[in-house]
Length: 416
Ligand SMILES: *Cc1c(COP(=O)(O)O)cnc(C)c1O
Image (tube, rainbow, N blue to C red; front, side, top):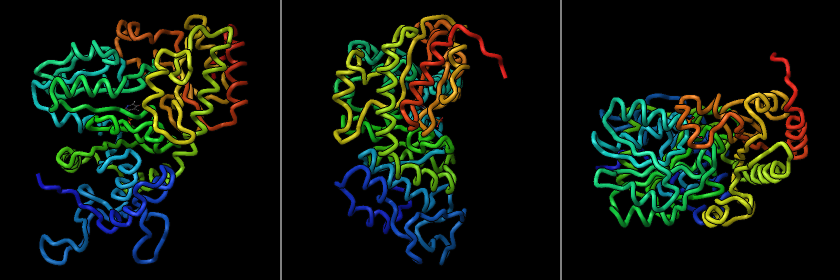
């Protein structure tokens, strides 16, 4: 298929001079060509939905209609592709829109082999829309175990869906091993990795030979809990053309203003992630020692079963770490857990993750309620299970707050 993507050539050419430079330098400069008329160094928000043509069918510049392409979005595509170490990126209106674009590559009867502990929204879309109404079949399995992955593949398998670490129990998949297993079985099976939990700062899954890297930009990329967005990155021109065609046809595009906010957020991704990695590790170590905590899940703990694999698939750069999500089990039941949650002052009880402010979530009652109770139990999402997303606040305040709330977990607090 012809590459329909309206490339902003001058911006792409401008960006070439940053190739091979450091992650943070690229985050700040790639795709951010100074505005051509006045030289503004901050990328403009191009609001026009339509662009003038000089002759029927001959646009004035590179763009005709904003669903098909927009200069602010192009800047963001170049920036995101550079950070995921890929040739191409497509920007969608949410992580779920990006997910559904991947599934739109498939036909009736095709099968997706998917990690069992996949993000709740992904699971809901796969089970209740794609499988229920559209005839794609799904096999959910613990494919973080190589032998389970091997046994799950069949002639029908067209896509393997990996999320690593998983949400919320933080199981890690060995990407090198998984790519070897899948591609030696059938090289045409597409491997998608949801990289939301680590962000491109900590890990670039494309380096291990996967086909598509997905990020929910709503989390670390945006980083301020104020944008819903999704990204898909690939090195394959054909796949990129197909994903662009789906984006343009379905129309799940991001607004120019959201693209601008995302560009701005990404410029500080490195320094936010460094601090988040540090804070999360300190939180995980603190919880391991607390008398009211029975178990901590964090791949950054040397005692965690996922540590040794995760360590080998992090990017090699200063400040890189294991991400900001830490999950743990309270020594207690539902009541003690809810008391703990309501006693917190600095940590905000809210869904989502990946922003500057620290958030706490009760998966069984919040993010994972749509998953059947027996599946939740099987995955370890019990009533005493808590998921934290460390922000960039002063770490002593985060630890002190967790400490007082854990020590008060036997006292009920009035609902407000
Ligand atoms: C939030 C999230 C998504 C969905 O992204 P939205 O932007 O909310 O649509 C997908 N995968 C993971 C791991 C997420 O955390």
